Length: 352
Ligand SMILES: NC(=O)c1ccc[n+]([C@@H]2O[C@H](COP(=O)([O-])OP(=O)(O)OC[C@H]3O[C@@H](n4cnc5c(N)ncnc54)[C@H](O)[C@@H]3O)[C@@H](O)[C@H]2O)c1
Image (cartoon, rainbow, N blue to C red; front, side, top):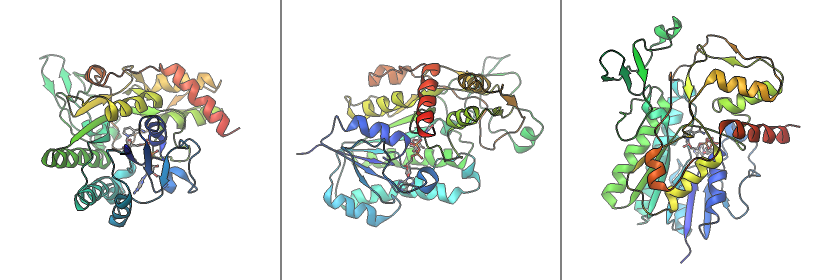
């Protein structure tokens, strides 16, 4: 029998990279994607989508989508990527995020139940956003504290940091999820829904909590996500990159090929032992350092800190990738400088 994989959101940034790898492992790979205009502009099959992948242009929030699809296709594995992904946008368009991310997930599961289909494994692309500000260490007592979400008035007074506390990398083993955006809350809901469903029906779910992904293929028109490609486009236009807060926010930027390899490992390797893994490059960079590196690649003017902020953003984000390394037989291969050069080459080719 054919070995089949469905990739929801398969025409997106991560979807294209993942589907290309899965096409080498499965007899049939089906990308289920509505070619969301905010991400894709015109509704066209992305050039980066591997030719072996069948694209079904439908909306995951509709029962009819799933009923039609599952009549023909019995997936062995589902990689669930379809989502609304705007962190700040979700605070003013919460229902839109809830509808796709939460109801889109339950509709998929209901349809599987209606058709008595149980995939061997479901992989969810979750996010570091589920952690919010995460856990910090008290510098005096050494104790672990959760400082919680920075309030609007704190940010308006430019109180960016948590005095007396040191940031700790997120780890699925012990960091409690406390999302600071509706996007993060809906992604956490996806995790809970999939876990509850999989446990009660007796199948596996593997959750990958991704840090900031960047690289060729990321939407160049979606202004709500993708700080790295946004910075690259500004620098390419010889503009000084504006940096929020004081520029000292820490992030882990992971190259798309490394994420695709992790998703593929979660889908194909022997069953992983945990159900949630943190996926990052392991390299921590401040937003100012990132902007300076990108400005350097284009000989652009130096970036400038503008003191603005974005609701829902967290002060620092990084993670412990050792469980994913050990269990998924995966490791990140791309250094930031090398990945940024690859991204800039791609943008130059796309926008000559
Ligand atoms: N890119 C990152 O930095 C990052 C970080 C953490 C987690 N993630 C997660 O990875 C997944 C993929 O993200 P991405 O960066 O590739 O985003 P993307 O926007 O490029 O891809 C998402 C895809 O989902 C499709 N989609 C949206 N709504 C849909 C609907 N109702 N029905 C069918 N398809 C729909 C879009 O058309 C798009 O092709 C998301 O679940 C996201 O939460 C991404």
